[in-house]
Image 1: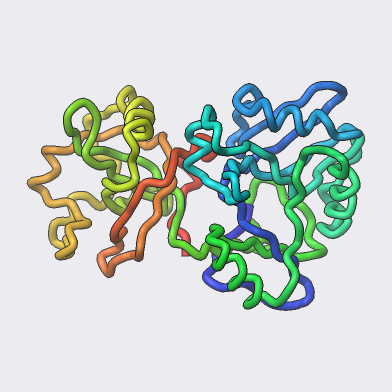
Image 2: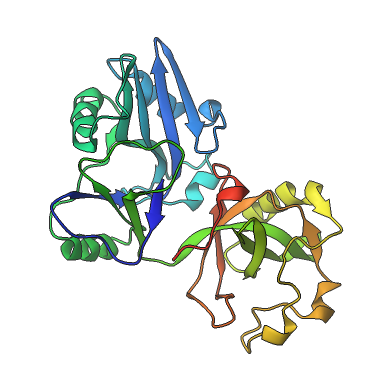
Length: 306
């Protein structure tokens, strides 16, 4: 997993790729069987038949690391479209960017360049898409990716090994829009669902309130989120820093003691992605908007990104 940064690292030891706006997925082809696993090790094979068909077309047994992405008619990724897999306007594809095993051979200790060279040969002729290295300087790459409206760039050390299950400075991600994952800890009820959700992040195993999210919900997504949090209600507030009335800003991102009685709390189990304009001086999100559910990520790994 990549660490977050605000600028791309420079130097000849780095390769640069598009940060695809989708679900990180391991694709396994073993004999005639294909299995898709999310980052939190859930089996998602049945949910993405088009990706299964693409991986099945590989000419060899392999384990690929990549991203499931929904592309519109112009080839632009849409994370929200992944929440509506029945849509006819988007094509669900798999972008491969790493090769972990080939014909039973473990490649984790091979340098990234060698793994990628093998990956190019394996996906050739199949419907699996290749996440190509981007040409140019970091500044040129950043300008081009911003201009296309894409989420960001991932820089990777050419000679790095694949490090299982941990964040490594061998991979560095830079988001051009302010977005990250948060955990839902509560909501303000309204009608049959909610007016807004309350989200936070973990620091030293404690859940810290980050902000209220009211914007960005379609009726379908609001219902999907509520379906996930309604059964996990709890009487106890899971945030260690609420209420924060003394720190409430004039923009209203905080929660007063009076507001606490209006809120409903849930066990911090559901992860969502949220966009926002900035962190306030009081460490709350300003102008937060819902982007999508993150079924592929567990709550324990949600931290505040730089």
